[in-house]
Image 1 (tube, rainbow, N blue to C red):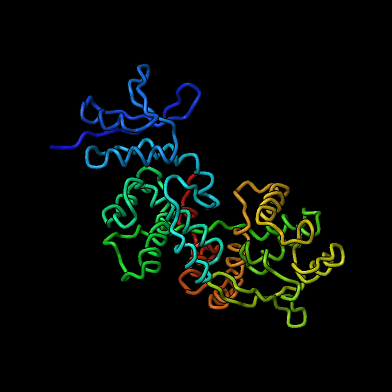
Image 2 (cartoon, rainbow, N blue to C red):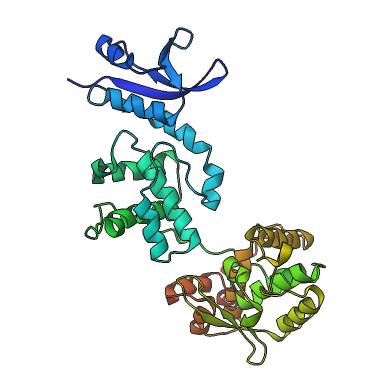
Length: 375
C-alpha cells in the first residue's frame, strides 16, 4: 500500500511565514501530526500549518518518517528563488536545515583551494545536503544525487558549467573528505557548451581608454587589455611585480596556483609611471580606500563606465578585454602557443577557441552573395 503524500508549500498567514501541509484526509496521519507542537489547522486555507523554521521542518520529517512521503518541489523551488542573485556571485550558502560538515571546509582550506572555489563548493554541497533534509548524509545514495541533478536542470535551469560545479562539490566530499574510491556515480556530465567569447574591436578598446579621464581607471583598463589578465590577477598585482627593465609583469599564483610572465607594453608602462606619480600606491598596483587592494566590484564598474562613455552597445565586462587581447594578437599573426602562455592556459584547446572569432579567418574569403545581383 502506497504512503499518503504530503505536499509542502509556503504560506503567508496572519502576518507570518508558515509551512503549509496539504494531503488527502487520513485519520492516522493526522494523529501523528498532532504530536508536532505548534502545528495548527487553517479552515481558511484548508491545510495544516506551522511557523516556517528549520527546526519545525525537521520535526515534520521526523514525525512522518515511514508513514508519509513528501512533495517538496514547490516548497524548495520558491525558497531557492530568493538566492538566485547570490548564485551569480556564489556567496556562502544559507543554512536551511543542515550545516556543512566541518571536515569538508577544513580539507578545502588544507588543500589550499582558492577562496572562490571554496565559496562555490560550500554553496553547492550545502544546497545538495539540504535538498534532502529528511535524510542523514550517509543515507544519501547515488539515486539521490541523480535526483538533485534533475532538480538543478529541470527546476533551477542552471547552465552546464554550474551543473558541473555541483557535481565536483559532491564528488569532493565523497572522494576526498570521506576518502572513498573515485566515483562516477553512473551520472553523465552535461555536454560542455562551446560558446564563443565576446570580442571588442581595437577601435572600441582604444575609445574606452581615451575617453577615461581618471588616470587610475585608464591605467587599469590598459593593463587588463595589454596583458590579457583576469580580474583577480589585476587585483593581486604588486608594485614589485612590475619589471620595467625586462618589460615584463609577473602574475603570481594565478588560476591553478601557477605563476607566469606577461609582456609589458611601452604605452602601458608610460601610463603606469604617470599613474604612480599621481596616486603613489604603496603595495598593490591598484589600491582602493586606505591603501587596500582594489575591489572586484570597482573594476567591473570602471570597465562598464568606460564602455558607456565609448558608446559601446554590446555588453562589456572585464573579461572581454582578455578575450579581445587574445583575438587581436591572433589576428596580428602571433603564434597560438605564445598566446597560450600569456593567458596561462593549461591546454591549447582553451586558446584555440579564439581562432573561431578572429576576423583574420574571414578576410581571404569572398562571400558568394557578392557575385549575385540582389538589388
